[in-house]
Length: 268
Image (tube, rainbow, N blue to C red; front, top):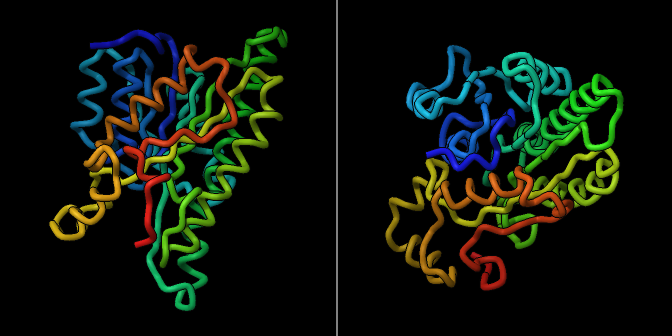
């Protein structure tokens, strides 16, 4: 059932073929938005995700692009998404990667992949989105508020807490905290808000190994005050709120979806 709080909005969700990204795309559609899905592979979005969005009466499109491919690739993704829906109002930067290694074993290749995806690609996708909104504002004669836009970055609790053996990942997420703070100030005069959502332990395919290990799972959930791992829908609900008008006075912050983990955490 559509909640309607995002009726008429048009959203791009990067990395939205599964897991948290797919849940976000579906929730935005449930709240009334048309959605562009994104993944690296050509050939279209997974049938189940696109079908569920379409069944809500919302328009859905798919743009294949690798966000780690540089500024031109990020700009192409945003441009094609805007063309598919006739504009964009919401950008959710969800695409991200992590690589595990002892710090002294991290390769330049893996470091570059993490930074190119989690920071550089996100940075230039956001830039392309802002340029798009500014062009829309110009078409409306530059009237105050015409740009109305929302950016939500999917960060991590590890922009705040240590995660041994994931140094490049933590550095990339820490960068998002300062980026959101800086852009909140710079973009506010354009009518554009930006926020980070920082998930904790979420039951997604990336955590399949953890979910299959009862001992590790018990040790982790013992550190979560609410006593369980989160679900992708827990993250999606907060993203939808931050993208909508009920969050019109919220910008520049990181908002945790972690069951209380961040301030009840012992290094693993």
